[in-house]
Length: 448
Ligand SMILES: [Ca+2]
Ligand SMILES: [Ca+2]
Picture (tube, protein in one colour):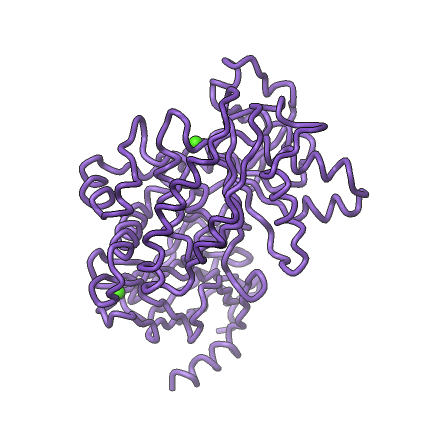
């Protein structure tokens, strides 16, 4: 019966799935000032590494911020080594984790000069060369997300080198595969990139503190999970300022990084780029001036600001805690694992698109969802209004059941409605994964 319904749904509504090839996993290279005065990059690195079954990490590169420091790549290696001690435990809980030898091989030293002083002839580093090698990888058509937890001049150098050594056509192919997520703007190289290469998708998030963690919560839920918790330092200022950049890319069924306005764990951004989003004040204090690169255009944080992240914060926290618990034990039965949301028989984490006529009803069926621990599941179907073109109320009937009906308003013709399914298990901590269904409302009205 279920299968028959699925077939009917395909026939009636049309079913379109969008994915990047066979996988929804994203490719990620981090450039980080880890080892600097603020320990928050170490916190972010621990958090990223325990999530490395949800994203393909291809590079971890040391970078500067506002001034020239000695290179700190050894500090990155220390965190990775500590993580590799618990990796055998983690592999018992999720199949997607990388191998220790691979992780250690992708830690690279970056440029020691700060800002644009680190870009140009003779400024290549193992880090900038590694970025080029990853983007060049012929057998992988997926874009590479370059995320900046510090300065961006390793990324700028990679682009500079390729622009000066290849034909226009080859260079266009190269930058066509690059996506950038910049936390706050921490040197003047970001403005240089955005000014000179406006075709690159470039996010500058200035609204990153949407999921404040309480000190006592971090101590009891993260730092207490030995031995990896020992690698997670007490905050100096704010916890994990750079983490939204990788949370944006995690393969959780909610995030769709290619569409900056869709929203997810790493925030939400306007499709309309704006000029002159200035980076942190220490750029000008160090004698640099982003205004030299005016005009430069970047995707800004959307109008809901940090609330774009905080709406998911409980799920983010619980996910992190569960992973820190995985790291403590090889015993699968001792800890909780994520539910598997399945919509209309689709077990992937892909975005689903359904075409519906105005005034029509769309049935969505998640009854095949499951949990590897046999936990009870709760369902929450909701309209995500912010990325939806249709801004008025949409009624979802049985919104807390496994099967719901969405009544598509008559005046929604030509507009998309984003429906998010949250599936949460009854384990401890309760874990949530998602599916996103875009209802693409046909122009033509339903015949009645
Ligand atoms: Ca940083
Ligand atoms: Ca579970």
